[in-house]
Length: 158
Image (cartoon, rainbow, N blue to C red; front, side, top):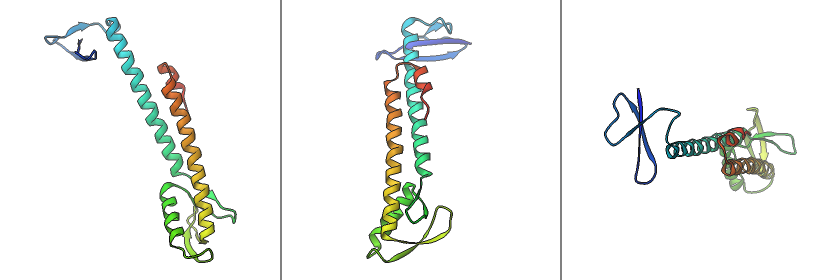
């Protein structure tokens, strides 16, 4: 198997492998690439590491948001993920006053009865927790964007 490359007009490279080196390509031995090809490959590896780490961090952020559970002052534990926050917002808007009740399913799948103030408290707590998660994500993302080596990027963990 032979490895080959061609430098494009924009400075990037096209790489390939096969048994025959195509016309317009230059053969190289892995580990003995020309300096400009090695630098380009290193930049590609660095850029890919950044993209991969940011995706990993986003996935972690989204997973944590999906797991938000809040406990309101009266002791009920409620799901606080984004879909639950949307449902709370709709219920708060629909309830005519602070004393009208609504049947709800809590985080333990038990039926509870809530009022507008209880839903508003839960929504506020869920929003605060989500904000903390997003702030943490942004701190890690900034670390990734500021990293100067692949090793620095790989060392970043939630």
